[in-house]
Length: 272
Length: 288
Image: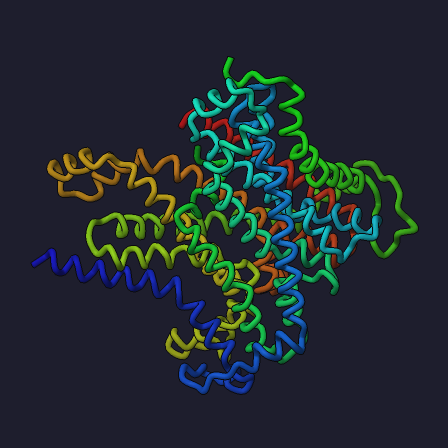
C-alpha cells in the first residue's frame, strides 16, 4: 500500500511546514501573555496563567498606542499619495506611446533595488537642515521611494489588461484621456489598485530604518518603539512581544487578504 | 494611431510621479554625493571641508568595508541555496494532487513569514534564541548554546531567520512556475518514466527558470538591503560578526557620526547595486 504511505508522509510534511511557519507567532503571542517572572523562567514554560498586563502597560504607560497611531497615519497618507501620483503615471505607461518610456519604466522599477541606507544618510542631513526631523510628513514623503514604484508596477499591469476598444469608443464620443482613465479604466482596474494599496501599506507599516533615523518622539513609529525597549539590562520580554503582536497582526490580516497577489507583488520588476 | 497623444497630456499624467520620485529619490542622492566629497562629521560640524575623493579612497582601502561586503555575500551564498532547496521541496509537495484543504492551509501559513515586520523577526529571535530561557535551546533537548553572544552561532541564527522568512517566498514563486506546466505534458511524461528527478529536470525545470532568476535577483538585492532584522537581533555583533553592509554604513554614519565616509560607502554600494541590476536587466530581458 505505497499510496496510503505516501499520503501519510505528505500529510506529515504539510503539518511540519505549517508548524514551522506558525510556531514563532504562537511563541510571540504566548510570551506576550506572560508576566516578567514567568517569561524569565528557564527552561521556558508552556502552560501558565495568561495576563493582558503587558498590553495594558505597553499601550497606555509606555506610549505604544501613540506610535501605532503614528504608524497608521504615516502608512495611510503615504499610500494615498502614492496612489494619487502613481495611478495616472501607470495609465500613461500602459496607454500612451512616447520616447524614453522604457527607460522611465526601468528607473521606476530599479528604485526597488536601492538599499534604504543609501537614502537614509542624505535624508537625515536634509531633514535636519530643513528642521523637519521627527515630523510625519518627512516619513510620508520618503516612503514614496518604495511605494510609488510598487503602485506603478501593479497598476500599469492592470491597465494593460483592459481592452483598448473601450477607450476607443469613449474617445469617439469626445471624452478626454483623463475622463477615460477615471470613468472607464479606473473602475475596471480597482482590484490592482486595491492590491497595490495593501502592499504600500504593508511596506510602510513594516519599515524600521527610516523611522529609527528620522524620528525621535513626536512621529516615532511602532517598529522604532519596539526597538527602543531593547535598551538596558533586564529586558521586558513580555512587553516587547506584546508590542510586536500589535504591530504584526494588522499586517498579517492584510497579507492574508492579498495572499494570492503577494508573490506577484514581491517579484516586482523581475517577472514579466 | 493608437497611443499617440499630445505631449502635454502625457506630461500631465506622468509628470507628478516623475517629479515626486525625483525629489525623494534623486535629490538626496546628489546631496549624498556632495557629502561624500567632504569631511563631514556630525560632532565637528564647524569643520566641514572639501577633501575630494579622500573618503572614497578610505573606503576602498578599508578592510572593514570589504569584510562587511564579503560577509553579506557569504550570507547570500549560504542562505539562498537553502531557500531554493527547501522552497523547491515545499513547492513539489504542494503541487501534488489531493489534500486540498490542508494544502490551502499550508499556502496561507507560508504567506505569514514573508509579511512579518522584519524588525519583529529580530525581536522574536532575541526571545526564542535566548541562552537561558529561549525555547530553541529547550527544543534542542535542554542544550546550553549561546546563540547571540557567540560570533559563529549568531551568524547561524541570522541564516536561520533569513531562511525562515524567505523560503516561503521561494516556494510560492516556484509553485507558480510548476502550475504553468501544461497538464497533458506532465501526464505524458509520467507515463514515460517513474523517475521524479527526470520529470523535474526535463519537464518542470524550464518552467521554473524565470522564477529562479527572479529569486536570485531579488534575494541579492534584499541581502544588500538587509538591516532591520539584524539590527534588532544582534546590532551587527558580537564584534563585527554579523555586521552586513547596510549595518556597517548605518554604524559609520549614525553611531560614529562620520557622514562623509558613510556617504562614500553608500555611493559605492549604490554603484554595486546598479551594476548588478544592469546585469539582471540584460540577462533577464534578453535571454529568458
